[in-house]
Image: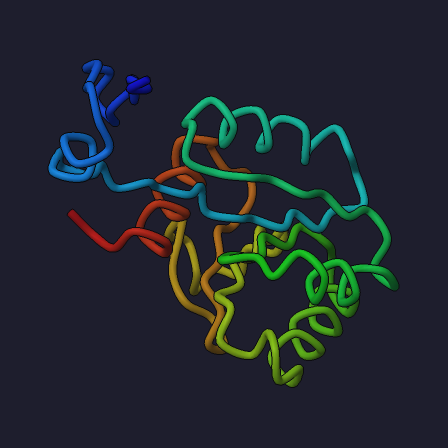
Length: 153
């Protein structure tokens, strides 16, 4: 008795044996980039999270407690950390991230409510960290995240 198996190829075509299936081109599987959002106010984070999730390229984890942020980052191993906390809390989180061996190369995008006169542009680099000065537009955050994770087009 001969057993005939049908394999479903990667492009949805039916094939009659494993050899035919093996000869079909493989499609590249793309995994979403992981982003950790750290913020005291879930309402602000929710807006950004929804916009990132609509883009369909990101897996999002939120943390609302500064004391748990470093452990969340170690566990989640994000491709990008988005921080929206004020002053000393933000600096402490960023310092801990960049001194941690497992996270030191992880980019940090800081949403800042500080807007000194010398930093009137909406985005830039301050003390080695990417930032956006508040008030921000969600489109600017999405563009900045895309540039950090996928490079400039």
